[in-house]
Image (cartoon, rainbow, N blue to C red; front, side, top):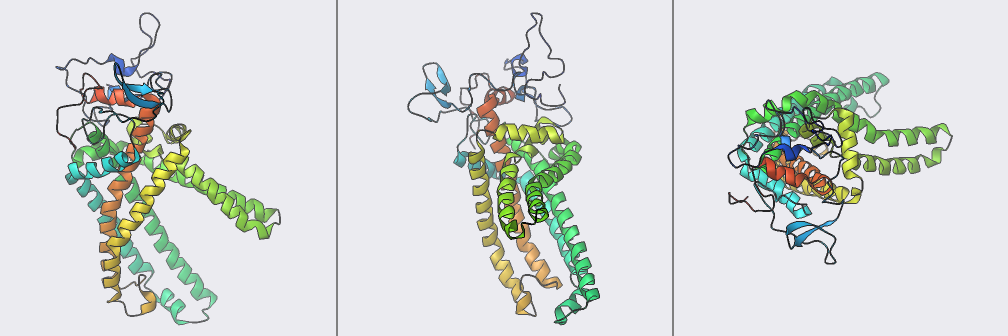
Length: 405
């Protein structure tokens, strides 16, 4: 069994030209005999699903780019009919129907994954949230509650040494918080993406299986997070430096605004790189190119969905954290330090609120990103047919009789 997904246009190992010199798509090599058990999982020790690769040549001809899915005389398929988008009754072995997804279906699929597979999802999200918040509390207590910070707060005109000591303490605390947050984000993205990929096929997964499937790609995922962060920040830094170097100081603000716009464009274009790396076993830069390719032609839709989930998370986490913030204020000595107190009790109370927000936010973010990636591949590369075969469905257009999600 293959140890990775085949990138577009590249045959998988053992899938060279046939006896007539013609290539063969990976999905077509699998028997649809019901007696043959479907492959288990998307990756891990047994390798990824054989039927989940993109066909040679990249995009599937029957999908035709961004055409419409509708019911025809021969069943459900892609159509450029005058009535536009028509939702079919597609096969649904797991949390989503195997066809192009609407925005509501992507959100519902993420929530359904958390509900149907709540044990691994809760264990992963809660464990990572507790780890990151515990490290954050310790870092805040050690480096933001010391003589240097106290001297900076007490003196209206602190000395240069006091300012330097306070900045050093803040730098240490900020570095620990940033590294901890990145580690937590990488672990959550890796393991929860595996859970979502199994949920799409209607398969169960344990925390141990998710860890076994994802741990071999953690270092690459760390590299991807750093590379995407640098690529996103580069337009802002470059434009600010260019504006300052040319003596156009008054226009630095304009350079910052233009840089931020370019940074958003780059971030959205690379936002699907993490699931591409995890599920296709791609390298860092190959995953970034895959994301760019999948987002091209649908940038505004991807941007809208990512913005929607971001606003939704802000609202939900704010609702969860407001009570803990108000409670923490009761244990804060000075009203000026509400929300920033470095005493143990307020830190722990605020940490509880942050953990609850992360337990909600991590699965939702990972789920939406993974399902958005699958939706783009369904639209461009006919991934729905390969998913149906991987789920053991003889006819991809026939709805399953299994449990509905």
